[in-house]
Amino acid sequence: KKEIQSSHGIFKSLLMTEQNAHIFIDEFGNTALNVNKEGTFSHFVYCSVIINSNDSEKAENVRQKLSKDFRLGTVIKSKNIKEKDFNKRLKILTQLKESLDFSIDVLVIDKAKLQESTGLKHKQVFYKYFQNLFVKKYNERYENFSIWADKVGESFALELQEYVRIESISPTLFHPDRFFFISDDVEQEKRIQLADIIAGSLGKIFCTSHSNPRGQDIYDILHSRMSVEFFPYLTNINEIKAFNL
Image (cartoon, rainbow, N blue to C red):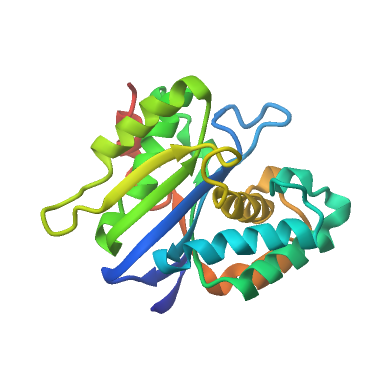
């Protein structure tokens, strides 16, 4: 894969691969668009951790070892790693990178630039729009894939799952094995926890309201595995204004 630098981020040229990808998605931030309110996140960060399906069992073994080695308990949560334990975070990311072959796909949403869209002010609309935007591209990248996204609210989970399956996932006669699931990362799909620790760490780089002065240290560990896109820098502003559901 060839990496190219862009003023908008780091992108990788990707041709469709025969790899059967297993993709785990989590996020950093909230959907509130009033970014001037104290405590509101300036950016919303989607993160996917992508592995070959052949490495699925290994990914779970790596998750368990991280939990044991760093005394994280049975569940790996980025929010449970305090700022005073930043070095511990770096060690976790380093061990994860060294133990598992994966790539990271990132979408950074600048919420301050979404003020013109009344529709996106609604949490459910926000999630539908950006989940669709984030996962649709995998139809062009992988012949077959299974996606597990972390659950966002009990009542909304099934509605979001069905929406993304209909609008974003495109099985074909020749590529029928394309799946999308909203899953709880504790009771259902624990490997989403790997996306949780990475998403929470990348938030300290890309979310200016919650950035960490040592964000560069995180970037130095993960950048070689990472492709990043920013929204709405590459999107026509009229497209955003029109999204007023």
